[in-house]
Image (cartoon, rainbow, N blue to C red; front, side):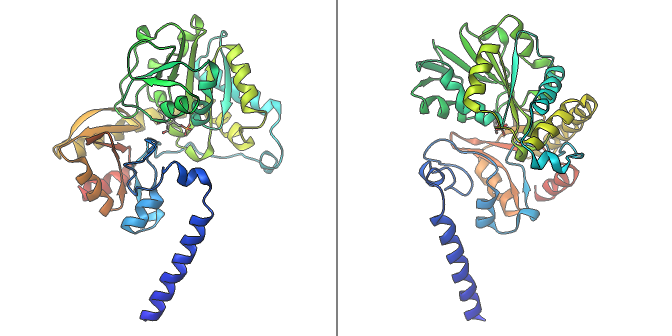
Amino acid sequence: MNNSLSFRTGVNNLVVGALIARKPAWFDGENMWKDPMGRSSASGRDHGGRLDAAIQKYGGTRETWLDLSTGIAPFPYPISGISPEIWQALPDEAAFERLIAAARAFWDVPDQADILPVPGASLAIAQLPRLAKPGRVRIVQDTYNEHAAAFRAHGWQVVPEGPADVQVDVHPNNPNGRVCDPATLASGLCIVDESFCDTDPTLSHVPHLVNRPDLVVLKSFGKFWGLAGLRLGFIIASPDRIRQLADWVGPWAVSGPALAIGANALSDPAWAAEQRSRLAQNAAALDALVVPKHARLVGGTSLFRLYELDDAARLETHLAQHHILTRCFPYNPRWIRLGIPDATGLKRLEDAL
Ligand SMILES: Cc1ncc(COP(=O)(O)O)c(C=O)c1O
């Protein structure tokens, strides 16, 4: 019995050892995945969604965990009609045009702007600092940390306030839901990351592209449509900027299935309207569960909620022991962010709380 246990452990160690040995340099080098609960990352680029590390620490399997550590909708857009040809062939121009036309109609993009599909808003974030000569970029804190990391990697100085050559706003902001008033956008290049804006399209800065050629708006498909693994996002900006970015991104950055699924989803405003009301309902139900537990709602969107309490890490650990993954922040020990659960998830959370 003991022998077989140590044998199994030995095999697991071998497998883990082999995986570690094969990790690409960037995986370890940036120290992004070392803390099982995602804090204290040396690079400052901590993220939600590290289920593997949580399973290693608290047990269970992917199937038994409820992952509320991200802002990805729990109701994914239904996938259908992806023919074998879409998987097999390189996507042709018509597939791009269909997606771009659907995106233009969905977000009511003015004629003055063009649209570039990319494999997730993350890729856009990594490329945008190349649009101007390195200088000072103002990124209001606290926010999604990839913007600052990307600008720093391209030699920019990142400042939280004061004069700058470029301004970046996450709108609504992750994690606290703060919105960016268009009147506060400075002149010059302004990047507005609307990855979480589709729950309330009335907030969008897209209409301002009519007379703001220096405005760049980002959209993420993965969150509102609940298909983050598909890797799809959009840059909406002036035609000359989109031409430049398209050159950097190359001809086949977005897969055929992503183009097709994205075009179907963006041509379906009725589904989007239903998604908004489902998410809003469940976000309210989540508040009703969490706020009475000595937590204050700081803000959020109907894709995630940020709560403040005396010891957020204690709640995080308690929920992890019930195999519910949430998100705390290295820079604020009182904050915990929860994604929106479906009905089953709400019940599990209620039982765990
Ligand atoms: C504010 C913000 N922008 C962009 C992204 C990246 O989105 P995508 O999955 O489309 O790359 C995230 C992911 O969490 C985010 O929080």
